[in-house]
Length: 484
Image (cartoon, rainbow, N blue to C red; front, side, top):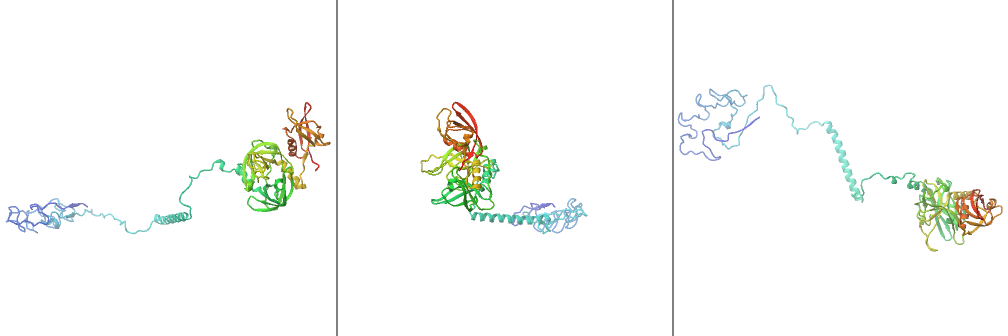
């Protein structure tokens, strides 16, 4: 509905006034009659209060009327619908000719409502209403969020009090690189598969306790180790398994010259190693050495095959002389690794770690310098089977003895003795013949012949290349077992 402000000035014909000031009464005015009077008859066009003069004297009709003759044609009276002659300005305020012109009076003119039309219903937004489905669903959701927030805050508080702290270390997690995924054929996968079959061997002796390594060869508890690990023991031994548990062990048998010994433990559920073929190795093949170097159990080191058929002679003063046609590797091997397995890239045992080369002086503790040697597993398996079957191992011989290097061009070893009816004699070899190669392996030192022959099993046939005079010849020799 429109809101019309009251007139801002005095009524027509009245002098301006100041709010709160008295109307001056001094002296009559030729144009302004005294208060309450309207001048002499006929002097003014304004009728007395409450009257409207004679007919036609005033354009302002009495309240509630629609005007007499001569009334306003455009202003309807209050509450009318705007018929001709009615006035929308009628009010007591407007009827007062003496009202304060500065009073903040506002006249509200009611709107016109068409006949038969009802006003649009207005809903009070603050009035309570029935809950909707959205409200019903929102309540449990808000409850769950509040509960989760409270739980997270309490968890964080407990974590901080427990020492977890609020600092996040490292970056966002990413997919592990291929080398860290530990596939079964990886070195980590091989180590995980083989280590449960590797043990620490402890043997009591008069001088204390000897410690080395070993590995489970059969599911019923036979363990392969080095002879020098159990040598000098009192017969009492124990085995420490990969999980840290221990079990007593007994010595089944030893072969000092091949440096292989077999002990036995009684424990169910043992897992034997898988054996490989040491004759199939090639220089450069990756290998792992496992054992307990310096009493550090379950140690794994990696390297490659550095050489094959590296003939060696070893032994302690006053003890047996051991010969090896060994597998040379650069995998780190130290004291305590003796008897542990040398494993190929497929997790198969291809050798028994036995000895190392070192630059230390006599009597000093030797350490790894990247020159380690293992007994080929084909030889170790044969010796182990002999020990388990008969309590001792057979020794392979060629039936001849050699002198030192000839010094002649082309090298070779001169035969100093040939046993009658022995393998060499049966192949036609004679004293004075110079052995140049056995199965293509050059002979340069007396150790070479003994170590290489003992690599093979009795009954094996080897090719011997020799020189007689100026002639170079080849012959096949069937090796035999020593009569011992």
